[in-house]
Structures are given as structure tokens and as C-alpha cells.
Length: 294
Image (cartoon, rainbow, N blue to C red; front, side, top):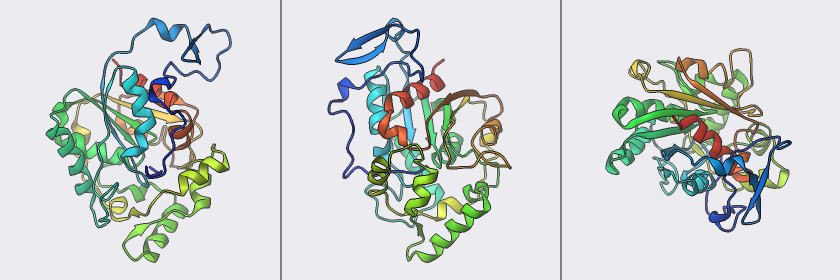
């Protein structure tokens, strides 16, 4: 739901061809290794080619399409087609007076203009609400929906309805104090909730390039009756250390959000809300592949 812009974006690998793209494991003990381009991997990862998939990756708030650069590069290196649409009020669009419907239309138009079919539609954080509404409009083009630590709203809810009271109150105050109906995150909030596993240097670099987020789409209540009638297969990717929503007491990503999907595939990782897009894109890419493959 949160992140950084591309103008001073520095990816840790100078050449995308040399990004490690094997199956991520937090414990390599007992596994056999190989080296490729000077990078260590497992023998098992050489034995199985990945099923080619078509990914459409939808970012969240305080981010733009460059949020996906490192992850998209890994997925493409593994033989997948990857698309990263930008939506209204973000990227080069300076108009912050946007609605949730305008954001959704950006993604729907992107998919239809490129005539994409059989896609794995991925939404991160606020992007979960976007793929919910997108799926209603182009269900015949979607192979599977993947929610990565993403909001899965109930019919008639807004994203703000799912925030803890203290967080919602803070957002409302930040919105009221802006002169263009936007919300800019204070660094302590960003650091503790969204990049809690990052070093201070990485957290500061990521924060330095975020811009104010249009507030209106976060508070709009969405009609999702059509979404909950769709038979589209669904997956949920949950990172254990994601602190953007507190676990328990009626909040959190999994199982609070995930179980709303009905039958779903659960894939877990050990990252936080944002840091791993910068520091471990190969791990995130592998989790998205596991969520999307047959």
C-alpha cells in the first residue's frame, strides 16, 4: 500500500540479467547449491522450469508503477510476461482529485487496450481493492486473483473502515490538514508500520521519494456484490512481519482479510509490507509465482 517513486530509485542489481531468481528459502541447510553469474542458488531450482504466466501487477498507495521494477525483472527473467499499469492520481498524473472508480478504470482500460487474457492479476495493499473492482469488469480475462498483504473489502466498506481507530483518526487529521485532500505519511509511522525490517538507511531512502496520496479513494465505500459472485480462483500472499495492520482484535491481513475470499490458496513469506521489494525482489517474485501457478 505504500512506497517509493522512481526518480531517484536505485535498484541493488546493476544488470537485471544477474538477479537471483531461484526458489527462496529462509534456511538453506541441507540443500545442494549451484553458482550462476557468481550468485548462489539451489540445484533444485535448475530442475524445474516455471510455468509461463502473464502477470498484471497493481501497486498500492504512496507508490507508482515503478514499485514493481525489481520484482517484474525477476519474473520476466523466469519467462513470464509482466505488465505494471499506472493508475489515476499516481506516477506522472499530478491530478490528486481522483476517485476509486477512476483508478479502477485506469487498470481496466490498460488490460483491454492491450487485449490481455488469462492473466494473474496481483494487488498489493490498497491495490487489493482495485483488483476487486477490476475483476468485476473483466472477469473473463482473469485466470487468478492474487492479494499480497492486500485489503479485501466487504460489500459496502471503504478501506478506512478496516483501519484501527487510531490509524483512521490519524489519516483523517492528515487529510484535513492538507490543502488538496491528500495524506502524507509522517516518517515515524512509515518506518514502524511499513518498512519495519529495513535498515534506517533503506527506510530513509524509500521515504524520501514518496508523495502525498489522494485521500478520497481510501474513504469511498465500494459496492462489491458482483465481486463476491465471481468464481475466479484466488490466492492470498501473507508476510509474517507485515506490521501495516495489527494482527488480532478484528484487524490484520491473514486470516482477517484472506478468509473473505472463500476458498483460497495461502502463500506465506517472512517479509514486511514494503522493504523486500527493494532488498529481496527474487523472494517476492517467487511467492507471487507460487500464488499464481496452476
